[in-house]
Image (tube, rainbow, N blue to C red; front, side, top):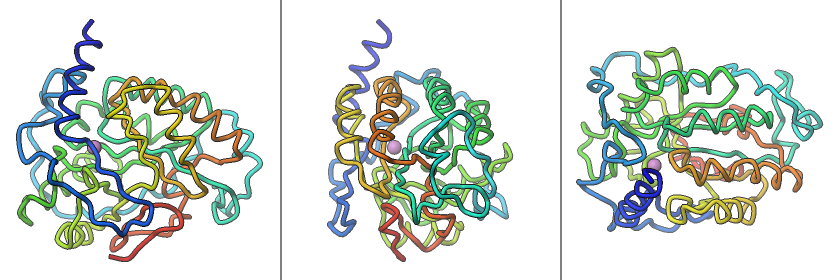
Length: 300
Ligand code: NI
């Protein structure tokens, strides 16, 4: 019952606010943030994720926040025929300049379904990329450290999921820098941020640059937060996939986590090698860039 009631409340909240905004694959059309929240909605109020924000205050802003990149993340364990057969770089990682790659990405965690997702990914031998909400990192540190240890890439998704473009520059800096500090505190470094709702402007870009963070958006939006339907998530992810795709999902929704085994099976049957975002890009990306897909890495 809790799940059923929670899902309805969450669906209503997200219907009001929109968890993400679609980014067209061209990356060129302006986005409409008029329906995005300025206040009220908070992941602290996420009924799927109690208790609310008991993990302590935001860490004090410190020096040396600049992301240094995920470095030599180990390959995900487990059997994976597509990965084994794929062309490799000198460091043993998949060479996506030759292989047909796509990246599964998960926002808004860590949460109560993250470990279930990690179990699925481990069994399939598939690495993914997580964009984490800062205030959840300390309480979810075990899941975050497990993800990093099992070869997944870690990025940030702001401290509290605001519309960054509606904040002052100082507010942007707090929201974008604090999660990097929270990750550094548990021994994880990143050079990636996914702005909530994909909301960016020149000031967001400049702050990301100053923090050493590349902005990673997406080219395939499953709209899983809207459908809250496992069959729909499977259909959207596999129908819209393309070589070099960055596929957006949310591991705070059990319907999305339940979709992942079939998504992996279907995409691998289509010949895709599923990789992390850094692997997709050959680690050749960084601050000053906005990334929509392997083929759409744009200087901003
Ligand atoms: Ni989000």
